[in-house]
Length: 385
Image (cartoon, rainbow, N blue to C red; front, side, top):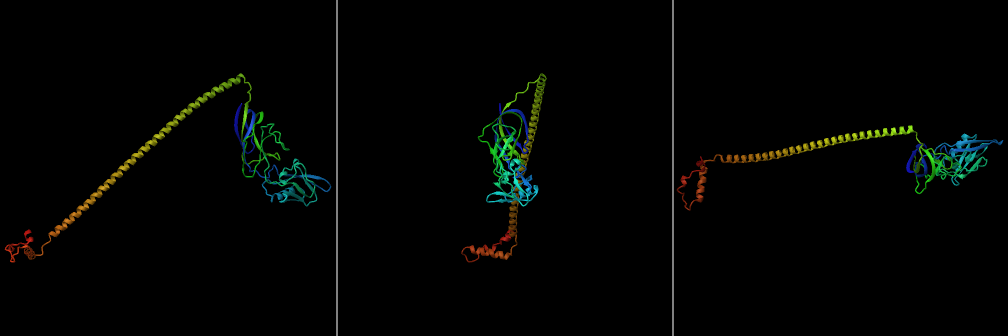
C-alpha cells in the first residue's frame, strides 16, 4: 500500500496514462480553473420548439443561439433571430424587467410551443423553460421561469475514476463518469479555486491505467469546453497489482538487463566524477587567473601611487628653489641699487667743505673764533679719493 499526490493539468480533458495500480481511495485536494468559457456555448444554446399548422400537423424544429456572451438587452433579439432562422415564420422575444420573464411571440399563422430539455432544449435555464413540462400551444408564450444569464449554476468535476459514493443525482448523470465535487462559479473572467479542507476519501477499490478529469454543467450534463488549463490536485492510496509470474527466459533477460544497467550506472558515475574533477580544475584555473590579474593590478596601482608622490615632491622642490632664486635676485638688486647710490659723484668740494665747517662750529668748544684745526679740515669725499 502507498500514498501519492499528483497534479492533473489539461485544457482538453486529456487522458493521461499512469502505471497500472489498484486505487483503494481517492481524495481531491484542490481544483483551479479560469471561468473563461462563453455564457452561451454549444452545450446550452439549443431551443427545441414545434410549429402546428391549421390542419393539426406538427413540425419539430431546433433553433441554435449564436455562441457568445449576452445581456438582458441583447439576449431576446438573439433568441428571436435564431427561432426565425430555424422556423417557417418570424419570431420575436421580449424581456420583462419586473417579472424577469421572457415572452416569445410570432405574427405567423402557425401556433408554436417550447419543448422540454429532454427533447432538445439545452438553453432551458437561460430562457426560463420548465424542466419537465413543455409550454402550451400559442402565438405568444410567456415562459414560466425567469431568464437566467448569471452563469452561476454548479459546475461538476468528473473523472473516469468512478466511485459508488460519488454519484450526482440528475437527469443527465453519465454512468461512466464519477462526480468528485461540485463548484459554484461567481463571475465570468475570474480564476475559480476550490479546496477540500475537510472532505473524506472516496472508496474506489479498482485498477486503473489512465486518469482523466473534466468540468461538466450540472444542469445539462455536457462537458465545458475550456480554453485554459484545468488544474486538479489529488491524493490516492494505492495497492500494487500482483505481477504475473515470469518464465526462466524472462528471468534471465531481466538479470542480464539488471547487470547491464548496473554497469552503465558505474560508467555514468565514473564519467560524472571525471567531468566534475575537470570542472573543478577549470574553476581553480579561472580563480588563479583572477588572483594573478588582481595582484598585477595592485602592483600597477602601487607604482602609479609612488610615481605620483615623486612627481609631487619634485614639484614642491622646484617651487622652493624658484622661490629662493627670486628672493636671492631681489637681494642682489637691492644691493646693486645701494652701491649705485654710494658711487654717485659729489656736488662739489666747496659744498663739502662748507658742511664740514658747519659741523665743526656746531660741536666746537665755546670759543667764538675759528679753531686752529679748522683750516686743516679736508672734505670726506676727498679723503675717500
